[in-house]
Amino acid sequence: MRFEPEDHAVGDYELEERQALRRVAGLSTELQDITEVEYRQLRLERVVLVGVWTSGTIFDAENSLQELKLLAETAGSDVLEGLIQRRDKPDPATYIGSGKAAELRDIVASTGADTVICDGELAPGQLRQLEEVVKVKVIDRTALILDIFAQHAKSREGKAQVELAQLQYLLPRLRGWGGNLSRQVGGRAAGGVGIGGRGPGETKIELDRRRIRERMAKLRREIKEMSTARETKRHRRSTREVPSVAIAGYTNAGKSSLLNRLTGAGVLVEDALFATLDPTVRRARTPDGRLVTLADTVGFVRHLPHQLVEAFRSTLEEVGDADLILHVVDGSHPDPESQLAAVREVLAEIDGARDIPEIVVINKADAADPVVLARLTMKERRSVVVSARTGAGIEELLATIERELPRLDHEVRMLVPYERGDLVARAHDEGEVLSLEHTGDGTILHARVLGDLLAVLDRVAKPVETV
Image (cartoon, rainbow, N blue to C red; front, side):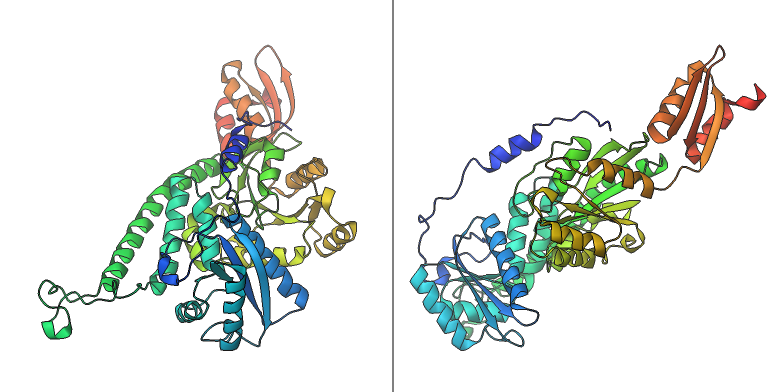
């Protein structure tokens, strides 16, 4: 296998930069009232996790809360407690019920926590009423994931996509503290405003909503313009008929590590959720010499916020336009089947992804339980067990990719003039060269090629039988 030369230290430098400053536990300001917190700045510090167990087993509920713990730690917080309540459905008022909310308030006070994170997406009313009881900031799983995306977005397109998703989430939850945002701008003195308050008659919160909608419209236009460059690159690859392979999977399953192992891309690798958001496309070759592109995509998670799926639509199109999907799953995870189901749920929302062949890549084989690996390989017939860290199984994966890619259906044997050596090079790059023979008149090329190269060879070269 050969790969394009890249800067192998890029990911290392970014990892060092991200690890340069770390929080010091115990130095956070203890909050006495939620009014001291700006609602839109999710600065997580000392947190208590709360989940509602509505279905499944206790193992499923605890596993979901363990994942919420990893998300909270990725966002930069210290997890103090994790609580689960068994209910048929979340309480429509306070998510966990008034009695349990009072118990939660006592736990928050005793532990000194300043944030409560709920394992689910809360309605605006649930957030407000639970905050009024526990007297600290309350956020839900969606807001937590959006905060992580905001921290890790690097490119201009990625930042715009995350901001759009955050604004979509914030718009129905927008509210003010005290009387600042709810004060009427305009009206008569009898209305409590008086001189200097007459105006368009909109409340401050209505003005904010309008500004947010205008900003969202601007971001959508910018993302559409930026996606044009991505579409142009995809079109250029498709016209050259270079097969495309998309690497998709659960967050922290090892997609970036696999891309580095296959291509030497040198992208950031970190044991954290959503460490890389911006898609990376690199070239590689299969064992028979065919050129393919490998695209690393954003990671998925259970209950991935719908706002993110919408905002990252242009990025996820890399999956929909691929010829083959490498679905990476963490073989060392306690419940890898649920990871596979969560990713497939998101892939089902991408146009065309259902019809693309899929290879399940069971990663982290060096740390996985052999029983779990055997169970997965029995359930997933088109699967390969690999370890991106040690390189085990990579050759088998490349052979499987080669076998599953669309075949080159034009076999030629032609005499190519020496002055058109570029066509021989294209056959190496885009096709499968079976043999080369140099003669006095030119190069006899025996290869399997794609349709566009065949058309050029028909004009320039001569079939060997007529020589």
